[in-house]
Image (cartoon, rainbow, N blue to C red; front, side):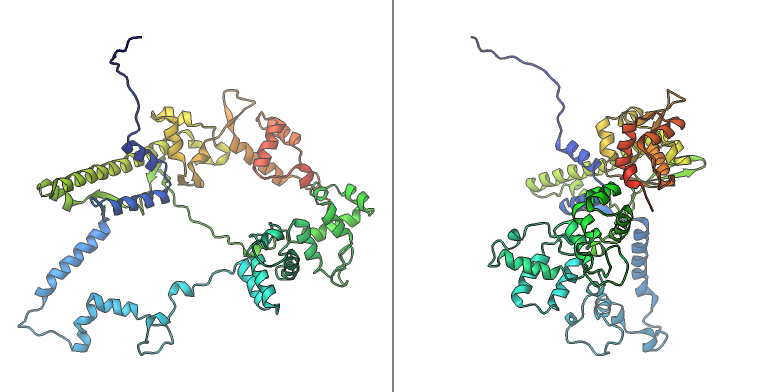
Length: 501
């Protein structure tokens, strides 16, 4: 066996750090991009944030006024007005304004200075916030009159409740590592289950509903006037404890036969169960809405749809003029300092170019989407066409992976509302009248949703009937596809949608 050296030429695609950074910036959402740019501005001294024209105009006007101020008053000419009218010069200094805004005077406060500004709470601390379920239960626990040991165990149990008010873990796990026994935890849990909201502290849905039944003053079938707790052992309790699955499927006859009662009694018991709350912690759940800022706007201008990039709120970056002049003059300092500044300069230039390329790519992709979905923007969701990444990639001459990165976590605002870019990419279903054309799966889902909303509640449409009606509207669709779309839209089956009363 003989050893020898061979020279071989080959080409490879290498992901340089700069290219990786450009790809990373391309797939960032708007909020993530703001955070990333703020990080670059903080870490790279050669990057500078460019002020807007309004800020530059205000700065220039302030500087002009500062230059004209000394010449406005001549030493030979006395100032007009009394000292009270002119005001003291100290009032207009920066420190004077800081003292004024830092005084924190409230309505009704004394005119004399406080001994300490820390005595006043901040404005953020005075803003009201909704009470959480844990805070509401702890407040009741503090007023319950239970012994301190029971309160300690009660706080431990309350801390393990989920947002719906359920205790999802075993009591043995709650008291693990403490000197409490499981019997102590059971006793404390019974005390907590008497708190408001009714049903809190339950370990499953039947227990939660039964706890609420204990607070109802009704008889077996729900008429008023019976003593509290009269529903124990009733038809309602029997349905809750043993037939919730059957009740979900509307199998009233099966429930009536199992409980040896009439179907009418099951109907009346169902009315009571429908008024119970399966999630006691729901009123205390934080339902704060978060504002979505669009990345692009699509507007109609002179009969044509135009894509406008939304760069408001994003820092406009440039190379720092000071460091640029310093490097051009050759006063960079030691060789190590010059090498550091050269490295930061290349990094700054690449970031700026990456942002510009990102903006151009987003506009190109959205413009292509608008071209394919022009009828959607003109007429609505029923005219949405099937579209895949490959079509847009071929239209603008880019790779499908690039289109996927551009459309991830990006939003568009248009006359149809705030939409994610991924919304426009969907599968298609064959048309019966035009085999060369297809229906969008989104528009078909909208048809199914509309059919269900207009159906007779006593005789809901089955999947086969929905498929037949869609075929009359020139949509070729199978029953199992209807079931799939119905499940994706969280629409119950026909048996679950049926109403008997």
